Amino acid sequence: MKIQIRVKPNSKKPSVTKGDDGVWTVAVKEPATEGKANDAVVRAVAEELGLAPSKVKILRGEKSKLKLLEVYD
Image 1 (cartoon, one colour):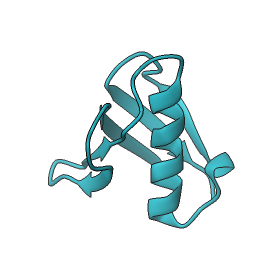
Image 2 (tube, rainbow, N blue to C red):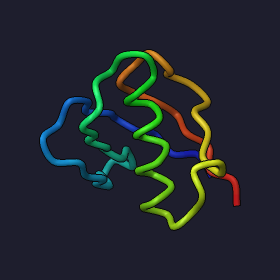
Image 3 (cartoon, one colour):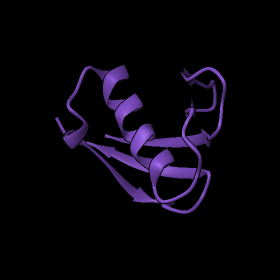
């Protein structure tokens, strides 16, 4: 399954919301430096779906706020 993500780094309150347009918004506390926000996004999505973080991979958008994630079952 592929999921389109919009990331909000440096947020005060972490959250995962699913938009009407199919794009998930993931707010994380970590800054967008050295891959910290990417790691936090992978962990947040995995937790939301009840999976291990190793089952979630960033396909596209490593350095962008818009990312495409793939979830392996």
